[in-house]
Amino acid sequence: MATLRALKKLCQQSQLQVCSVHMSAARQEAVVISGRKLARQIREEARADVEQWVSTGNRRPHLSVVLVGDNAASHSYVLNKTRAAADVGISSETILKPSCISEDELMDLIYKLNTDHRVDGLLVQLPLPDHIDERRVCNAVSPGKDVDGFHVVNVGRMCLDQSTMLPATPWGVWEIIKRTGIPTLGKNVVVAGRSKNVGMPIAMLLHTDGRHERPGGDATVTISHRYTPKDQLRQHTRIADIVVAAAGIPNLITADMIKEGAAVIDVGINRVLDPVTGKDRLVGDVDFEGVRQKASFITPVPGGVGPMTVAMLMKNTIKAAHNLLTPAERIRMVAAS
Image (cartoon, rainbow, N blue to C red; front, side, top):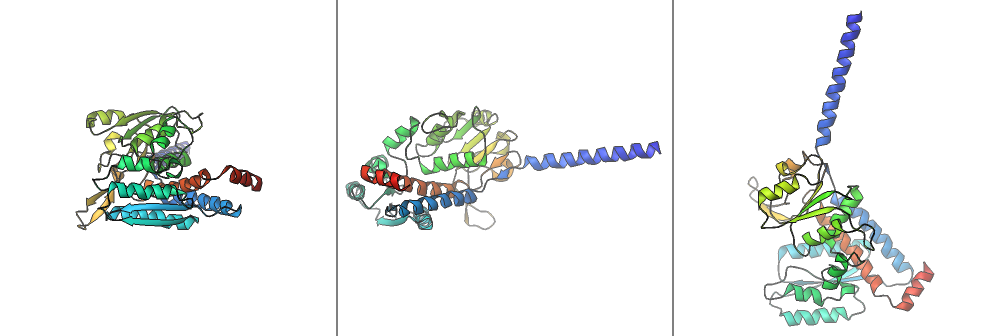
């Protein structure tokens, strides 16, 4: 009888151990963060903001997009932006210009849109043709209408932790991290990529002081770039709590470079040839299937950061409408709220 009880207890312990092993294995596979789901939440918030704005007697926010040339990807991105605008109640227009437009002609158009009181948000879709200076164009857009957050004034305010128009993709990454509950305070972060529109702003948002006007993540951030040796990058990523891949290099981040339980945000958008179908497909900078076995959180491509970029652009357009209020209109807004 005692022997039977002992055997029964041993079996129960074995079952618990097996169960524990299975649960441990299940925890090793990352939670796939749905950028589409988070973007829907943000667009719902934007829609409510727009309706509140209109209900207090203001005209509907308006976004103007300037699209130069025939870049297929740019046309697709702009279509997504104008569809999102319509979804949240923002009016929009796309101004098409040929790739042969001169820089001066484009600057004249931007000036007209800057001075048009009906235009709240303004963006010039990048990239531009080689004969046009992108930095000059970005700085020509009025800072208050600069929904891309690329004007030097907005970049400077962001670096000083001041409230401003944040670049949509870095802001989207920041919102993914915050809304998913991924801790940043005191954590090690690696940002792979140092572009002025994506990598650098992401690093700024993550490392700056959480107590300031524009709160940051209080993380310790390492930035890598094209001249960072792969073995050196691996040394940094292996101790990183968060890895943000924004280098534009397919499969740059592989499973052997990630520590167990790290959060991985994939900003890369790369078109590669699918050997099975023979067609182009979108991939990120991260080996998704390999890395998801070790990470705690991971974003997919497509369906991760991309939808968040568009959602944050809608938030910036609403902010731009507020920027254009006259003092008298601000008083009326406060009285009506």
